[in-house]
Length: 151
Ligand SMILES: [Zn+2]
Ligand SMILES: [Zn+2]
Image (cartoon, rainbow, N blue to C red; front, side, top):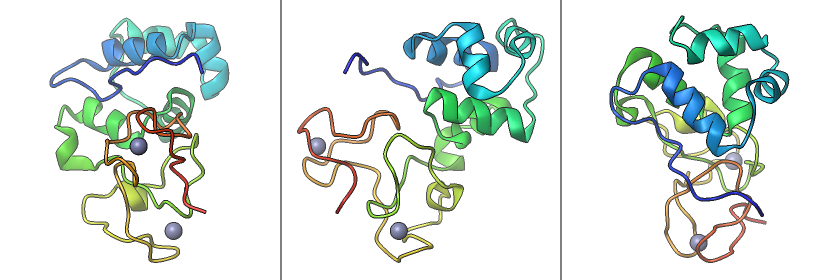
């Protein structure tokens, strides 16, 4: 796989435009490719990245999160300039989550401990080596090679 390990979490007080650009670069996407993947007009992406707007519609947010492989909570945190710890974490149900897709907000909510669908304890790290999840695009743990999905 040709994806390098990058920190896709927003830095404190990082502006939305710079954050989107950074994560887009780490995904090796052009503005046009991102706009197609996210279902957003390329003008909107240019406007966001140039700092022309720091607002995201719900559709824009879910599109960008899916295209960039980040949880919507990260975008919320950047838009509201709040630390991620306050909004949620990369947590998932090892049984219901399909690696490579976005996480259900019901899992990433700070108060969630168990899966709303099957009751399994939620996880934010590899079940085998305990390293935290680095990107929602990975299907396997980059440290030990274990699948994130429990079968
Ligand atoms: Zn579940
Ligand atoms: Zn692992």
